[in-house]
Image (cartoon, rainbow, N blue to C red; front, side):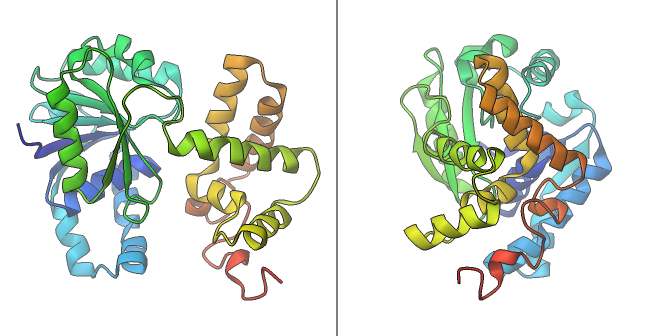
Length: 295
């Protein structure tokens, strides 16, 4: 089977990006979301970023949108023709469980099912779906049109040929597939990134230095174009909050709770990152873009 019909379940930050990138590269895309209008708003909001980073014209952007054939709240309708379903619902176990319980009742037997989860592994979610032969993870980095990596990992009982089909799909939508041979919490990217971000947030929560000062130190000392708090704004503070909360609930880590509480204050104030116009920086004219930021 060549994957052509793709359903994205959940149109948040990454779900909307996966949907649009797939459509832009010629896939026939259906989006399932609890709220149709918010999904459509997120999809259309990608136009400026694609123009800024890829110089994509409005006509070409709209041609991509035309391949999104439906945005619906009806899961049965959303998956009835799907070759591949990519789950991108919020990073909370109870939300994942409820989604997969609903999905397994309506998804066709031919359909490959993949999670984009940042936090949970296939072995944790496949029990909710119930068919390990066709279940795997495909994990994307935020701003996938620019940071075009897809981390792919199966489970011990998956059909190997389905992993290859998903690798081919990733290539077809412009991603560089990274095939993990076995489960690793955080995959490759987040195994490296999350400890780095955790260390930065601990410095902030403990009052050691401000987010801007921490970013400056990192950027000047390493030559990196982004510091940890610039990255957090891009990832989105709601995702960072959920990861910290999950860590505290799983391990009792007190620092993770303090970080989660601090992030929750910002989220409740509407300051949850780049997409909100404010996080640790103000957008679109973020402070780190100023010529004198590193001086």
